[in-house]
Length: 148
Image (cartoon, rainbow, N blue to C red; front, top):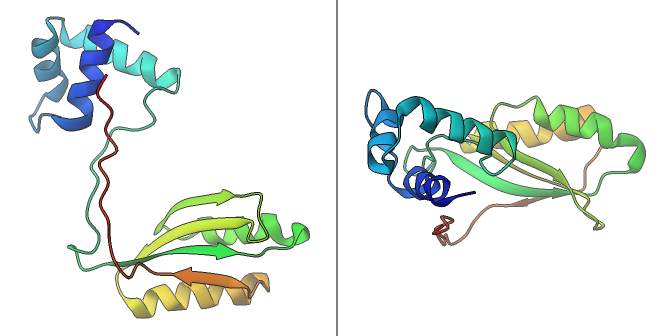
C-alpha cells in the first residue's frame, strides 16, 4: 500500500461522501482519477484489506432488537445448525470458536417476539437446546476505524 491507498482508506472509513458519484469525490481528494480510485479499491478488496463498503445502522434506533448467542453444538450437528442459523436474513455473524460453546452468532429482528421465535425455531429444527441468548444490558460504542 502506498500513501494514496492509505488516504483512500482513511476517507472510506470516516468521511465517505454521500454523493451521486462518491468515488469521484474520493478521487478528487486524492489527486487521482475516478477510474484509478475504483481500481485501487477493487485491488484492496481482492487482497482482503477491504472486506466491505456499506452503511452501518443503529438497529436499536431503528426499533429492532438483537442478541449475541453462543451455542453448544455437537460435532455431528454443526453443519445443520450453521445452515439453519444462516438461513435467517437477520444473522450478521456466525462463527465457530474453540470453546465448549462452539458456535457464536448475532441476529437482529424487527420485534422481540420474532427474535424469540427464530431462536425457538433453531432449537426445534436442529435439536440443539443449549443456546445462550446474551442480549445487551448496556451498550458501549467503540469506533473501529484505523488511521492509516
